[in-house]
Amino acid sequence: MPKFRHEFKYFSPEMVLSAIEQRIGALLCLDKNTGEAGEYAIRSIYFDDIYDTCFLENENGTDPREKFRIRIYNCSKERITLELKQKINGMCLKTSCPVPLKTLEQIMAGQIPDFTAQTPYLLKKLISQMHFRALRPVVIVAYERVPFVYPDGNVRVTFDRNLRSSSNIEDFFNPQAAFRSVLSVGTNMMEVKFDEFLPDFINEACQTSLLQWTSFSKFYLCRKFDIHGMA
Image 1 (cartoon, rainbow, N blue to C red):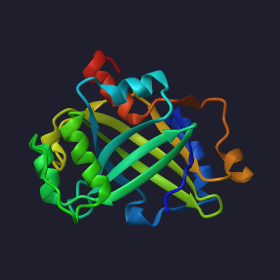
Image 2: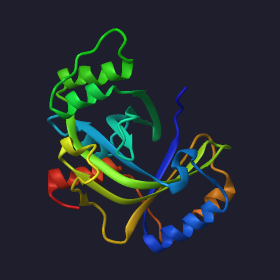
Image 3: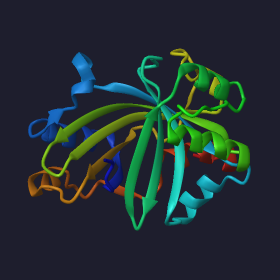
């Protein structure tokens, strides 16, 4: 059963981020999905309506709010996941379901897929909002992630680098796709996520005055290119 979680995001100079990563790596285990590489590449298609509602809600700090995304790993078609992220009273809730490749290809081609009684509820909700709210895919968000986990508190500390975006939705699976960098050179991101509590030793390992907390999501940062023409 999905649970509401705390999520905190920080910008950091790479030198500082690498030092924190070394500390966390000595205390926590890597996520088992990283494999031998110790990281994985994430790409997500985010949706918004014709009024840019999701973008503006993030910009204005609207609570509650929600947004849809479809995510893949390492440009693979083997695991395609639809996720709905909701923020309520400052807490985050993520629900998800698998997406058939054919359905995603229709969405990438600008079509609205059909659904049946067997279609997962979350996918039905997305398709319904594509009909009634004119939701559409608007941006690809891509980055490389090194994720560490700790069972007590269901903690995840992730180090995300090379954040970049593209509005060419058809390039979602293309390993050679052209992207534009989003953050300043030498700046990357750390995220800390947990359920009821964050163990003190993890909190202490993440502390430095050079981290810059941000309320803005990667989706928001990437969409600023399209809407405001700025990084």
